[in-house]
Length: 403
Image (cartoon, one colour):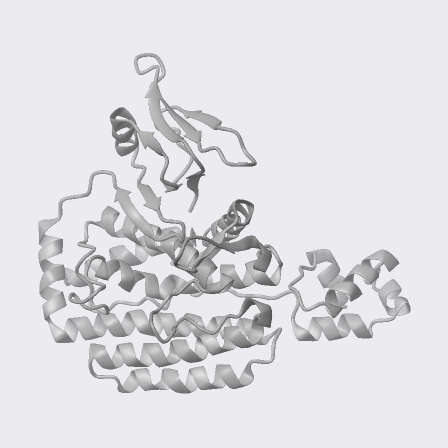
């Protein structure tokens, strides 16, 4: 995942020197702290996976659309909260037989149940894994236990509706754990309100919404590349307010943990704080300050680009999303009997768990000297161990602590 993020006033995408160089010229927008930034790219040498335009001022020329289409670069236009307003995709493979199989499968209750169960099973597995990762640092044993207790009910679900109920109950417990961990001044009270889901009345929900917008773009891109129909899903209904992109919402579920982890990293490390958000207009939903958004996008990119081993290869998570979409397509066409979204599983490790913090605080200068840890290093280790925030320990220092 390596999107080119454009924002500010006056974003411009056009081509120049068509006969000699055929360059794509991109002007990033202007804001209070930044003048226009111009970059040029030759054909077949565009280093980004997509373009995300976060703004409403500027233009794209028809020739630029042609250039991007020929070079396989999707364009996503997003709202301030990360939700996708519009997307322009490269040419889609024409696979009528695949789409026919997808529509037929969506009408088959047994197939829909199998796929919906696989999606939610993966989402729950990752949710529990994230809680276990958080549990190394925070006391959330009760919330983790309740989440696992609710997850057991998935085995007894016999309809897609029952699976959605289990998923919802697990999610409530999962977000309870987040609420216990996050500082009170952030006022995070979960993902549901009395009136609507996914509100941005607090900074954490605003960051989650923005990150899920990035994830939605990756899922749309994968569905488009494989040749599936984004409106025909299995877990989400074909009717109601989620009709437009049902399969996109389906495929987001096993990978939402990537955004959740990114948001937790951002607030733990203080890359994001209450001062990085503001209200505007009459809807009372939080917006990002510009520099905070840039920092958060960097964290999202790092998390999506973390490697994982799968079938003898090391893949990044955007590639995993496309691989799993291809596996779904093979299942729909009857080439495989089962579908699995649980694997591959990420390796989640903490360098600041409770055991390490306690070991650092107990360590004397003499003990540190025996391990080859200097006075200044021990001073910073102790200061970080006393703080609530997340901190990293270099591998060499971590090895010395383990001696």
